[in-house]
Length: 372
Length: 265
Image (cartoon, rainbow over all chains, first blue to last red; front, side, top):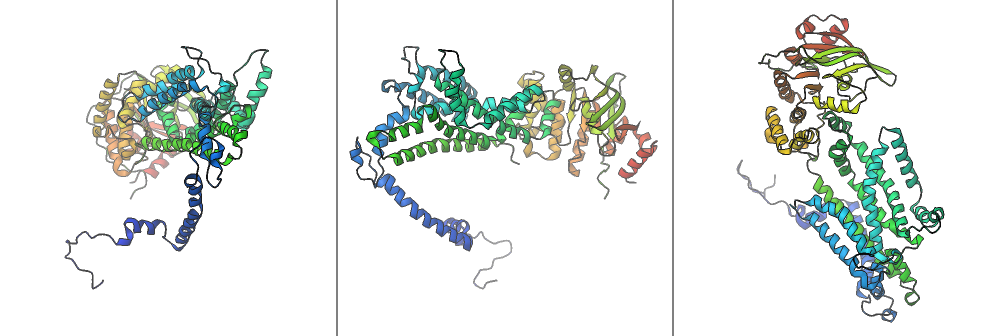
């Protein structure tokens, strides 16, 4: 009891503001950064580390960097990054060796995809499942004709010319979109009570998980044609896509199986007791819950797959990273490898972080009702 | 304070409940094994339409396994089960037919947490009986009113209390208009104050003439509602009788032992 604190009548105590050091910025600092001696020390060490690392980085990447120019002469001062290198090569890094006058076809496809995807985010839009059907069925057909050509008056562009970020997105998108449904089917098959189905699924999963993706691509590219009859040629990109699809499906199958196992048996029993057959039970009761539960695992696999696409360099396809490496070994532009890899890292980070944020948004949106 | 098996105050049914002569379920020489373990031994049981059966017994006696055989959540290895004239075998079509006519209420409710209460109730009618959505929803609301929680229709199961969830589970089964209702220890997972509301719904259901088989420890319910109380132990039916006879004149020693353990005098 302090003599300086005023006393109030019982039942009439007013609402007082909290002490200054417990709220606002001071309060946050105290609670999160300096709550104990050890934490305070670690905060100071961390701050020093950031001060040591960040300013030189900003200086190199932004302040002293070279943005203007067309040749390497613009970048004689090497204390700053040479973004001219990226600028000059930008079209190839984005599209590979796709003919410059046909690039509008790729851009058109991007615009359609982004517009359709944006529709999925509009709250209250009723026909979202139609948009999803379009994205999964209609859009691939449109994209195929846009990219490959050969019809509707569009000149053909052979797949060896595809490259850069465009190729990474094609391989990543096909791998991601195919691996989830195939993975679900494999997971269900592995848990099946029918011995033949179960054995086939286990064999498939364990085989494709057991070999490195690099050997899969290598086999697909070099060994596979040896088994084909003379003259028959299978497009190299298609072979790579199949390899990536099967590889990723095997991983996805195990992620989904984790979700199926985690569901209480009572959910299966209640669905069966109501008279739902196997497929209705899976589609209406089990998979919605199981997939929701393993969203972190699924998106993790997607992100890993997206970055694994860089391995197609081994079979002579020049994806985003491949083009950057190609540009870096060009005789006119030797010595700018660092800028290339920093840009590659940045590019991949943008896509992977977006996927990660979307997954968090999805988890939040779908968490209705589970929270008590 | 008595032990876990209490006698809850169950109101006596008001309607006259008649039992028909038609057979709803027939079990003939039923045997079941879990691997080497002989869990059901030579079960012979006939249940008529409109009958209310209570099955009691110590844990591990096979009572839950028995009723789960009726809707093929468990398979039997020997003997016959005939439900509503259809024999239970490996034939999927028969199993699905039977499951449409037999509703089941579980100890742990097993509501679908990703769907609202209303969606839980309309799921099976829409997808199994192909009822149009509006009709299914109207019917679901009718049953939710009957179990006295129509105002919870838009909520998710996670937002309801245990007693409310179990009542939704009962309504969900009723929405399929089954001819037989199976109850597998429906009140065992509930707090004492919620048991009465669920038992009330079950009495109400009995009054409407539903064929019911309940595995339960609620002896008050058995006394007032059941036509027959069956005592199981070690996989066999030891004794079955009308409630009054069963509780006052148990024939077998094992029944006497069980009753002395559960009833407080």
